[in-house]
Length: 127
Image 1 (cartoon, rainbow, N blue to C red):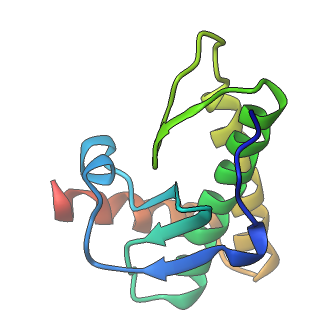
Image 2 (cartoon, helix red, strand yellow; image 1 turned 180 degrees about the horizontal axis):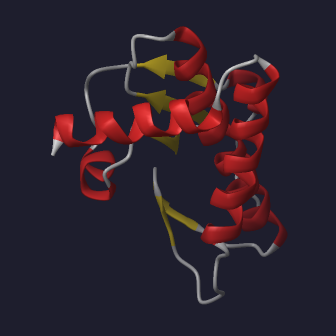
């Protein structure tokens, strides 16, 4: 069973409304698939480049996860849940997404450590 989604319809959103999973995982970005549309969401940082870096990170994770699910025919239970007996290499997906995010930040001439510390500083805001 292949997941039915079209990357051309991806919706990117900056929002102060946190999804439950974002609060639980203490994250400032997330993604989910709903009605065939990939939704990428991020908490606003007040810096457009930072917001775009977060959205890019989430997009990379989402595309990796969805491709993995299609390759291994892993069914989707709900908008953000999967049903899999097969181990899903989420850590690998996160690490690759973080490398892309870091490259993006540094390509803009920004300092990765400054960015990373700023993002970590936002996390307590929504505990």
